[in-house]
Length: 229
Image (tube, rainbow, N blue to C red; front, side):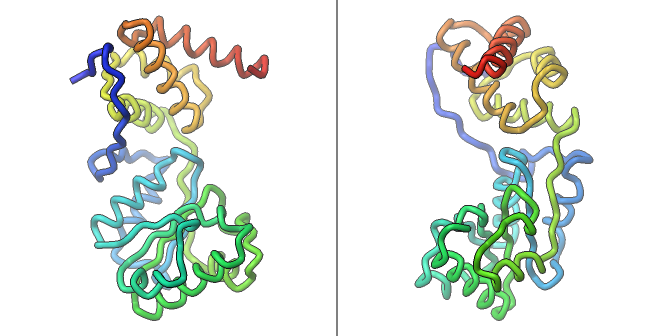
């Protein structure tokens, strides 16, 4: 059910397998994440913000009994426990400036694999661009099998937009999504920004999200980006 415009409800992200739309842009990554085993028991998943890395990590963790942790939240004392089950470490490049965090991840990498567990690592760029100063860790990362989430095609971008609206309990007509797919900047981050803007304007004006509103909001967003506002 579409939410009532008089209530400002928080967005709740749906992270189940049934909520992930498979298209040619992500089919290879989905297949690899669903595989029973990975070469060397480790995998690097890369892709731009909003591409679905966290979503796929949650699907994988639910199906394998794995744990998910942000690289920046790793603690050395937690490594033995984390290494007893499959583990996903998200946003690894974010610790490029923290040598102690890199040492902790290196320890987790070695112990988890020694325990026969699988290790998933994520980042926006391909591993060779992570530039982790701890050379031993960087070499281990680059040695992992790598799969990327590609930029969205029409089908995927439309599905992402639909999901973003659903997460906010909004239900615009298909003509809204069709217009956005055709005219917006084809980036996942932009999709999230446009949906948030439409949500805010519709709420403030107490109106439904229509194609006309999408035209206005998208044109304003383009004008703001061109003028640097």
